[in-house]
Length: 247
Length: 244
Image 1 (tube, each protein chain N blue to C red):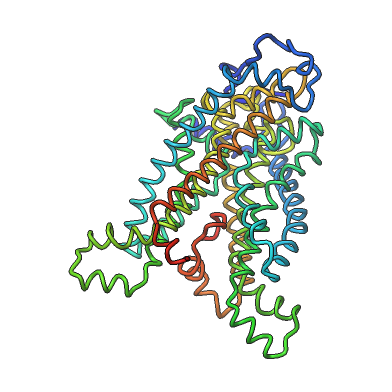
Image 2: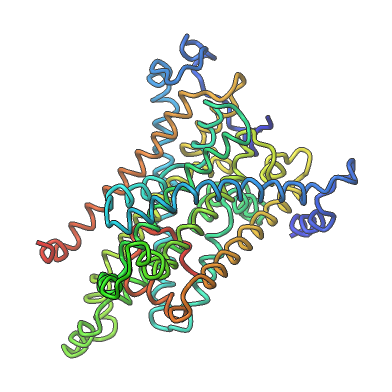
């Protein structure tokens, strides 16, 4: 099997000493000894990098998507082209997008490249949900705000955006969870995140190393679930009226 | 820029390498990619559509149907593929298993939501006209659910194409990902050329499915389809491919 792209350089299986544990040599289902030995040196740093990769991508993606959604909200004619553009980005398979970005001047095998790709994938979901949220604000509410003498900007920040929050946070949840899953592929470009242990487990000389695969994969899924739960909590705190209405 | 020009030259000679002039690698691996995508989608649809449609029709199991989609989205495809290979070995069947695992959740979730959110008044009206459960499903609920059901199918198809190329990293050598994963033989121009082909293929499949969705949507609803998605439904559980 050929090594993945970036593996020529930095990705070297980071076992303390090669196959020091019996269950590691046997490549059993899950080798707790290996897990404990490599938690501090390999898995925990990878998890932290994964969080940073995701956070940067979602924050930048959110800022861009918000700007695009506001443009589309104000000028309906911009909506369809923007949907086409963001769908186009979303449609490109991840491996292809990462590879296509590498030769672009100024990007190369860097974290910037990985972030550009990850941001590109968040745009469609965030853009569509923000716009849906804004469009779903009832016309009567807008009329009332106008009747109170609010300016367009006041209407947006005090009425429309708060009412769109559930949809916006729903979009953030989807975007965050899928970015966490996608960020594992970023390890091909830059030696960071939970993709690194996954790739190193794949390129293990005696066949894929199960413990490392399961540990890194499970950490990615757990991270996604935790992030999702966190965003649900944020939404509850920020939209108390939704619960009040439901009660 | 130079690299991209060379990539198109690579595509122009159909991926033939200087040493092997009669092996059109691009055609070969594109067909391989399409083959495994098609098989995976047929299996996934056969599993997921009946489940999702049935759950949505009965308005049951919302917790399972919705959370399945959320968990499916959280699965890192690289890890799923690699775990499949680690436990079952390299081969078409094991890659297919991973693809199906990734493709089933969005179809179930969207089919569930699509049928679940059909206006109950319409179902009542249909029942009042004397339609049986099956007739209601076929003639009322399914046509109205087409946009959401198809959104799930399109999300899945994208997942599958994307994951098929990634499968090359785990040793499966019959997709376009193989070229991307073998820069030593194909050089950067080949890697980029293959990446462009994969992107083009994904966009083509997406457009094809969008066309299929349009053809399946009842004529009276066609103009309104986009509005149905955008105005009445906050897409918490739905994949992103509900547009174009």
